[in-house]
Length: 115
Image 1 (tube, one colour):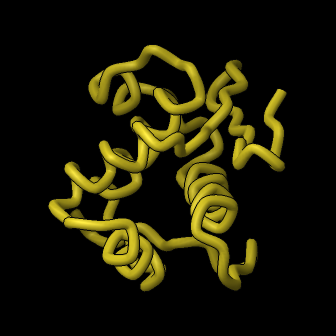
Image 2: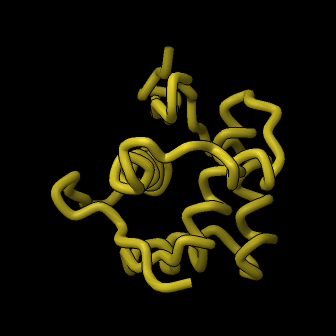
């Protein structure tokens, strides 16, 4: 079960329930994946609310590994989105809010941009 006090967010994909978490290692992996030098730049990048499908995939894969799931990027890309992309975008918005703080609204989750 996800513990929001530890920055964990629950996400159901298909018939599976996953925990997303941005640990220190996951944050370092995100810095590398997005080619930024520090957390402030990473937070600014995500603060725009504009994320491509590739961005969502990167964040989701890293957050799943941070949550204890041994899934490769390819495994994550193959997960079934039976309920569409909206639940994933909402979970990532909640995860980024839990990690970086600031104001966010579940009514306005990051919207996937064209890849």
